Image 1: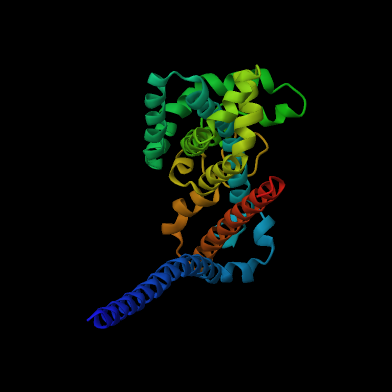
Image 2: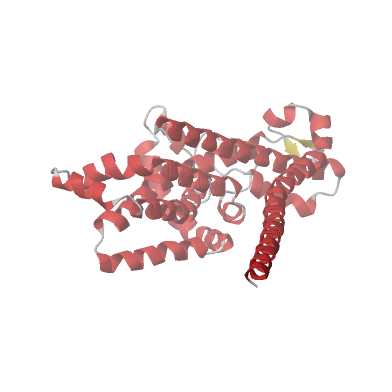
Length: 325
């Protein structure tokens, strides 16, 4: 009897092991397929855009990257103007947005009383959930007139006469333009960067900060020497996440950038961006070369974004190596 029970138990255990192994293989191939789907989608997007823009690249060659002419009537296209506008507005957004995001995260985690942390955190998440077209409408109908009436005239009067830097603040106070677009983009990326920073600041081990306070450190010293160094990998990742959002933003930039194909040193002047050019002109592309030029712009934006994110990954790996991780 006991031998029969032992044999039954052994056979039952064998069946369970086989079932478990089968389930594990199914699970492995399912998640493996999910991982391959990401790579396949990325590769398919790159190939489709490169294929669609091939006609423009064959027709205009490398001149498409550094030329400034965009003439649908003469069927002459070049992408330097939208590339320049994309990079400038994104750079402005990062210059404005990153310090403010850092300040918000430090305030919420280290300075604000507990009763205020919840409302401020909720406001950040609410800003992140606002559609970009709402930012664009607000920027065009509310913020641009404010810039035209108050901010831009003051910048032109105070900074315009200065040597070198004054070139960035010359021209007419139109309200719309590169500076306005950069500020609106900064407002849009602040919730994303500050949310990442806030979350990683909250996971800094309390004994590290308490030890620093016990040694007489101030809040500023704790943030500078403990919090930021401990979380710098995630902080850099959050910053590049915001940069990726700024590079690809479409509707908000379309409303306030001005959408003119010219390169101007002054931040007061209107310009164009890759996303705005595609959004504005895609329905008007009535020839193959026109449509191919717009798709080529999309491919260039894809490449720029990929390079930025790859640089971020390399930087994060270098930081992790320096920390011995």
